[in-house]
Image 1 (cartoon, rainbow, N blue to C red):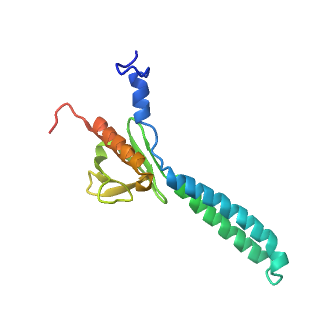
Image 2 (cartoon, one colour):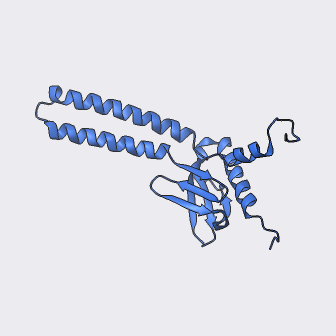
Image 3 (spheres, helix red, strand yellow):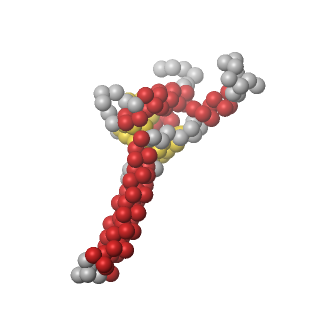
Length: 162
């Protein structure tokens, strides 16, 4: 069955597109690039330390290596923030914490007033940032926030609208 918009996409295709993961674009590119640069420079520094600073030993090299790895891990974690919707809910993976929400737990989606990322108002009165949709992505981020709001509306409909 093809939809009436003449796109050749079925309603199932459209629904699958609506449920695609939310990921930032600009932050992902920058932090993954930075992680690669840090790893390369850490390798160069660890290799060069014995010849440029003879007073530093293997412990110092290990410390430099660990600091480079920790910095790269942090960049990777920033690049991997996302929100993954499915039929039963939304899994939000932020910088440190991941949280699974059922659709009825989400009351509203906010992205105004200069917020750096989308904020969800939850049924228990709490709020949750969704770092997978970031203001730095401009118009794309606004479209993604609307898509998330559409998903919340789609999955929150009831037979009776009280």
